[in-house]
Amino acid sequence: MLAPITAKRWDFKAAAHLLNRAGFGGTPAEIERLIGLGPEAAVASFVDFEKIPDDTKDPEWARPDPERQRELVQARTMAEEQRRMLQQQRQREDRERMLELRGWWLRRMVSGPRPLQEKMTLFWHGHFATSMEKVREPYYMWRQNELFRRLATGSWQQMLIEVAQDPAMLIWLDQAQSRKDHPNENFAREVMELFALGEGHYTEKDITESARALTGWSLDRETQRFADRPRIHDEGSKTILGQTGNFDGRDVLRIIVEQPQAAKFITAKLWNFFAGSSLSPELNDALAKVFRDGGDNFKPVLRAMFLSEEFYAPDVIRSQVKSPVQWLVMGVRQLGLELPPPLACSALTRSLGQELFQPPNVKGWDGGLAWITTNNLLTRYNDSATLVFGDPKALQGAFQGNNKNLTRIAERRLERMRLTGVNPDKLFTAEQLGTREKFIAALERRFLQAELKPAQRKALHEFLDARGESDSDDILGAVRLVMCTPDYQLT
Image (cartoon, rainbow, N blue to C red):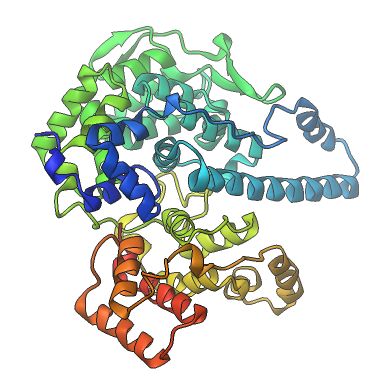
């Protein structure tokens, strides 16, 4: 298990696979660069990202704002009309901030210097799924996103502790309201069921006892920070997963991480996210051992995973359905585009079934084949035209819906969604455009890193033959056709 990939197997397909899975894809030139590095240095260029400077600026509003919090308290004593106007103002402000935040994060994925750090941040966002719908504070959502980024490949126990004390999570799973006379079990249940152990590896008694131990972990809403409140903490003895003592929140998370199942659970989740396939018990045991030997840190597991023969197996390469976020980010990178404006990005990913900072429930997005419904697949085909040709009209329905009165609003918003479209001169050389076969090979190399199926290749030939002498529109039409193939939905 986990035998290192050999230099002989380190070819264009393998390097492209690493770029797609450890990052968000890229151009043939980026793939060639990874080939030249060799497998160990190529993997290190992703995994050792802390060595790479990142000067990305935070959103201007991404800081505690006690005055803003005090306004909410004061609103309770305001006249109804005044309170309503303040609420509307806050809602508009929150919508604009969340729109900015989604664009800010997507820009990091598209052009940031640390692709694996952003990919891991996306993993943790789906794992600890937390939604703005309930949290209702953009600063908390940004703060949690930065937590995931800062601890992306670090200690599992530290991650669990900081997530448990994170304001967004304290609100999301009601831990902020938990006290000794009325322990809230939501976080205690989810940390065992969804975050760290999985069903069948704990009892209801473990949940109730853990909830008691977690009492006192709360939120100071004025300072917008975690607050440990001893007066509402249950000081009694608890028995959790076979251990007894006067435990607190840190003890609960330590005991959970110590369980043999904890290492197997989280390494299996990582494998599924990056490899896109189920893993054998033997491979799971091997990954869990690397995890334990590395002090329950994630970096050694990722390095071993990305260097392993198993990660480059034929049934792993090009077998994972792209999530809407990955579809957008990879598309932008492969097409040589600037990231569309935040409003357009938000409309694109929402129309495909994934809105950042708004997962459907505490389990997050199902992923895999769930991304490909009949409607979503058709939307991908339409949205590929939006990217390639720079026409956002296909997105109008995202704002208009069934309400015709929203037409003017949709039109105004479309003005904020102007896309540039693709410049074919940046994608293909004159030599690559010299013959039909060379052009199709260039399309395959850039967008699939594999050959089209015979029926798809034939359809592309027929499209180009019907056009005669190809111009820019024909080239872009061919690009769009490739993006509408089933194979393009996989990575």
